[in-house]
Length: 328
Ligand SMILES: [Zn+2]
Image (cartoon, rainbow, N blue to C red; front, side, top):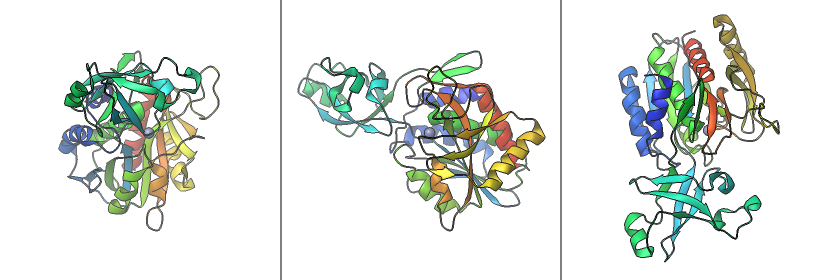
């Protein structure tokens, strides 16, 4: 399956942090024909093994997405919500959302709110209910919802709500399809609860016990007007080899091996330093007695908005780099 088709399929599923069953089911279906063993661990991480000779390499991409969780249902039928992960009310304003049971709504700021300093408590979700009674028949406190926004493609650029980190999940699935003979014992892990503190990756890497860990995630760019230089990458300049983010300083051997692999195969790469934000790499590195850890990142604009934008050619370069790395 092409990257974009996998991404489209994942975008239809439900999978906010802590409620990843829907997205996991889809990934499992896509991974099963290519893995030797597929298991779901206690927290819900999906672990796909492909046996080979050599060190145990863990590639991780998180399958959870940021979203909302209902905290109150008002008597007029509007919902109040808490956040799952780094969702910004300003960026979410007037976005369509959907619940696991298919109920749809819109995330709306109160009219009196100061938009520049918009707080989550000043916003509500309108599911079209006439009153609280009707709303409670559709949704209850504790239910979660996600952006209900389609993916669109123009040239090689893709825009959609959950490229973070479904595009990386698609990259892992494409890599898995392409591997003939791994030069390592390979474990691909689709982690849960990354957006609320790298929780799934922490337990999964205890389970897997990798020798080398690589987190695959989106990263910030420095290529838009007024960039605050939170990232170092550019769209269209290739796969980004992580040097550092706020959760990890990558092991120099892993950085060097990834860059050597890219050079040997003529795969375009750039260096990634993400100044604000962590990744699963931070949790993997600190497992047991420590894991040699790195990251392969997909440059992405407008992260955590409903209009995340990336270049499919960069994602394709990540597939090539990861496939070459694990077969080397
Ligand atoms: Zn992410």
